[in-house]
Image (cartoon, rainbow, N blue to C red; front, side):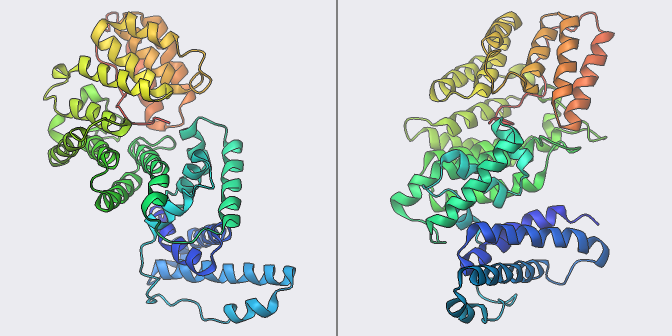
Length: 425
């Protein structure tokens, strides 16, 4: 019996009540992680408890009590702490036990005492259920560096004495950008899993959509919140068409568009249209507009690549994100030809964030294939396959290389497996 998805869903629901009671985010996160490890070991053999959430809450709370007792003994504060520790452990039907604290947790992790990158990393770890390695790949940094960043962030939240509550007004606005980036990364990891045997992790993408809907309900007039929700819906609409009967990866230009979720597309288009009508567009609105252009094309041949290229040009003016430049190169290749796209790629060679990333080699391989440079394309497909940690993507890249061995005229097909918004840092 696999319980990993259930545990990932329950983690933020358990962490909230523990943080509220003990007011020590770092120690509470450690206690919940220990409870999750205990459940992962016991439940497959012993079966699920009647209330998995209550079981985890009890275990995590007892571990926190042990932690507090240890701290009390070390600091000689037994008298003050003893009264609080004698309180009974919260019962499963306690009024706080049934409260969904996920949004409060996200805003707590994105406290202004943290840098934006640290806040995002901590939230992905505590709320999103991503491993340190997955977060490191999303940020294009070594795993050890990310582990240190998360550890320092937990200590900062602990020492700041931040209240466990939903911020309001200017305080909430100050944290919103980091919160949206967190949800964006969680969705991307769910839609295009960076590690393992699955093409996507629908539990993560569904949770990101749920949380973004909740923030949109809280802030319905914020154009970037609306844009992010639109981007998620327009991208997730293609999810069922991304895999074949053997769970193999199917690139965008080969997908059966009748399998796309047209209700989600309609909702996403309406949202991004509303957001763009409010004035100056932000990054999430522009990415949603790109996704809408793809989704509204009845056939791949109908895709409006000049419009997509213009949208990525606007995005490039707003940020120094190398993935935006990568996607702009793809659009350039579709508008002006593969040689023009390859010329743009050459400007990214010196970017340390992207130099060894598999997507750079994969895009180069696709454009070389379009340009008829079969031998060079095969080499780049192999290079990309060696760098990716996604098994379906590796299989796809190796399959492309194998096909080219017997294809003397690959033609000018569209770049494959390059869906806008997926996997951007």
